[in-house]
Length: 316
Ligand code: COA
Ligand code: ZN
Image (cartoon, rainbow, N blue to C red; front, side, top):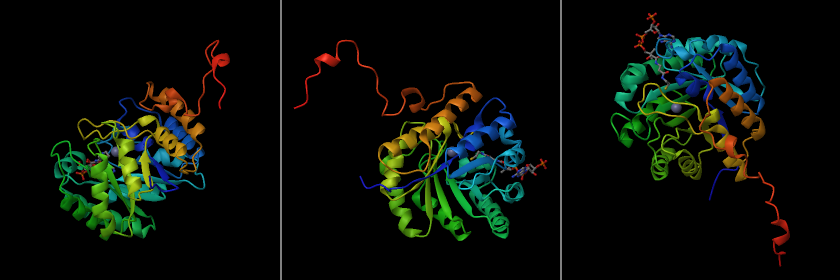
């Protein structure tokens, strides 16, 4: 396999994950999770979102979370915004980077942000102006890149035109988001083969949901196409409340474990990440989808059953 030697992870659990949690997570616990994540060496954290509190009540404490976290040098803190109002709030709250959201599908965009794609892009133009005036880089995520739970296929030409507009607005990076886990590895490869040469200065991120157990295969396909920026959620939290059938993101510690096992550097302390995942399970009060928390790392060994050691033939 031809894979990048280094990958930059962006943890999105406190945004993509906490936005869909049914029970209120107290602000100080959100802050604790962000601080534990940064302490693992996580290079990027999408802390929260500055959206309408009516749309996402679970993240209505975005300002307080941003104000309460410890800023670790080496971690960049971002937040998701759908419009310029969100960008003003995010800048005032002191984010390092602005992450924007628009969908490649008209139906999902209307369901998610109550705007057509054209209306969203107009808001994102105003958003870019706010960000650029404040000197904040913009990274633009595109929901339903690989398919929409309402419309099905999203034509590549439509995706390309959304990417074009976002790049023209000055996006430093584009996040290709598989919002409801509809992508497959061959498709991820095809989409990147089409887009990457057309936008040579763009940093690509793959944002996956493991709804159909294809997140890691999709990530490997993207990495083979040169993608080295990946979003993931601690424990496998996550999901868009406005996309039916949505479920958790690829689990951060499972993905970092997979990358570690392949010798790919993330700069993250996997043991600290696993501990953080255990703490997040405690906070949300249920067992999360992550596998490594349950199985342990691949280096885990068990004691031999009685009487076996003596019967193992000597190696030639
Ligand atoms: N932050 C806080 N409040 C906001 C806001 C923002 N970024 N953007 C708009 N609002 C407020 C408006 O001021 C207005 O408040 P009021 O009712 O007190 O006057 C209210 O929200 C409605 O504003 P309007 O512009 O009419 O928006 P809307 O009701 O059509 O909703 C969005 C549009 C984009 C604000 C809303 O759909 C949203 O926040 N969606 C986010 C969805 C999301 O996060 N999905 C998951 C992540 S992919
Ligand atoms: Zn997502």
